[in-house]
Length: 223
Ligand SMILES: NC(=O)c1ccc[n+]([C@@H]2O[C@H](COP(=O)([O-])OP(=O)(O)OC[C@H]3O[C@@H](n4cnc5c(N)ncnc54)[C@H](OP(=O)(O)O)[C@@H]3O)[C@@H](O)[C@H]2O)c1
Image (cartoon, rainbow, N blue to C red; front, side, top):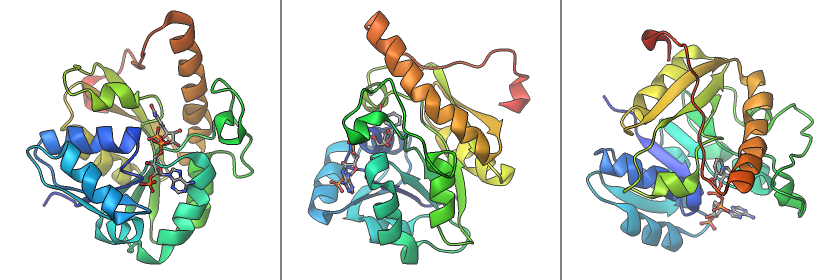
């Protein structure tokens, strides 16, 4: 059975783009927001093949087997505290947040130090024990994800202490043509993958481009 999918902060650039792509592939998605009316409006904007519904973040969290967290780093901890009691045992939380310096008014090519090592590890310290955190989507441009006319041709790097959870998230994201998931290792590797966002923003500024990453040389069965 297809796991139910929720996106917290699904009214934003990344979350809405993800919802649009998943819906186009025929999957049903619950979008969460601090304001359920805003979520309902965003859902109506992106729904195509699969149904997209709008909810409060807490209700969306309660509904999801796989819950994508797509909020700014500065609101990551607050959002997780708000939905903590709604997350069920066995839920997979996919943390896409990046601790960019923009969260405190700094440049987008710099990141902030996080005591736990990365935003994803911080998320891991905030969710209930039965919830598994997967870090991912850090290098995927929200603009390109949201542009359904654009053919994606890139990888996303997933890290988690639970390889089965990575496999389940990969299975969902595999419905998006041109986006390959690469199992990158344990959650502590999010220290590296989150930093790549700042690197890619710098590349994008230098080259006036919207870039993605591609890992080469992998056996096709190991992606
Ligand atoms: N944009 C990209 O290309 C990209 C790529 C990879 C990773 N990321 C990461 O993914 C995350 C989301 O990025 P984004 O560009 O989609 O962000 P965004 O559009 O700025 O915000 C996403 C949503 O988060 C909620 N939010 C905003 N401020 C909040 C606050 N103070 N408290 C609680 N919720 C708040 C809002 O939803 P409501 O107002 O409806 O609650 C908003 O629509 C970020 O951590 C970013 O670093 C972004």
